[in-house]
Image (cartoon, rainbow over the protein chains, first blue to last red):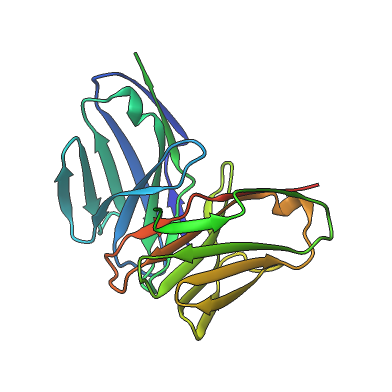
Length: 109
Length: 113
């Protein structure tokens, strides 16, 4: 089976940086996605990594280490609107995604 | 207009009733997926379809069935609903490449009493 772990909750202050870690053990690997999901809404795409290294996209960056089965999502200059759940998902090699349970980030003023 | 739509958005039903959730997309994608989301468990795949003639079971297909009526339409049925099927259900679509993101519909909140 697929095993994807991420912390349940994180809290940070407006303007700060938060790093959300994700570790995975899956039967196959063809890339890792990060999605953002506000309460009661649909998940929306943030990033995709398939090669080792850092991908930067504005205030958000995502890192992947395939040898360690590890990724992180870095949120910089936190804003109140960043309060949401962040979902780590692995493409298992058959065009299907296996999702972690999600990390709820609360941004405080 | 939204690219992926789901109907109904909310539904309350009773144990034993048959329920159909519908999904339509205007993105022209061949691949479509049904997920359920429960607190603390994340998104779990119920069924997926890579084209009109292709239907595959996901992680938790028991108690569910699907129909791919056209490229743009993918329906999920609960033949005899039970309370532990109370959840938030999402439909999603994607393109053909491994790197293509999935686009999610707004979700259907289903309560089975």
